[in-house]
Length: 106
Image 1 (cartoon, rainbow, N blue to C red):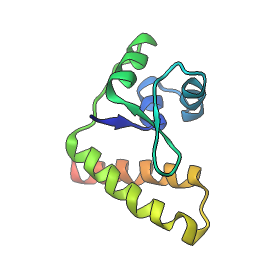
Image 2 (cartoon, helix red, strand yellow):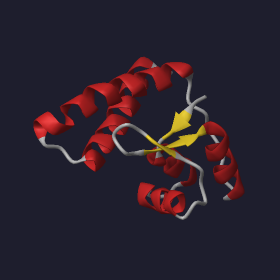
Image 3 (cartoon, rainbow, N blue to C red):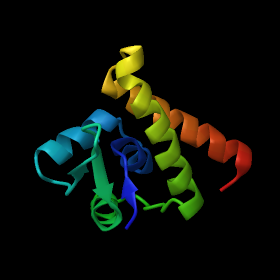
Image 4 (tube, rainbow, N blue to C red):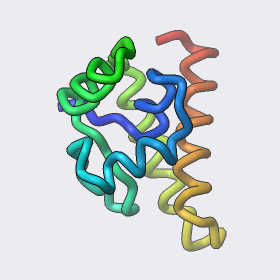
């Protein structure tokens, strides 16, 4: 099963990720917590929510998912060492993954 970040879902709707986080907290979107405490939204829940709001669901490729997981592992391992806030790490993971996909295609 593929999982999406709040940033992923927000970008499909042209919203800020805090809007999606609030929807998760209100129970409007089903999500699990990552080991770092971040919301991860199952693909079916992401698709249902995006489409219910009139958006177009754009699934990520398996390659992009793998890249996202690897970047997340690396940065989450550095969170305590560097004293980074988990929110900052989450944003960094998304930004690095997006840039890598832009460069590599995928």
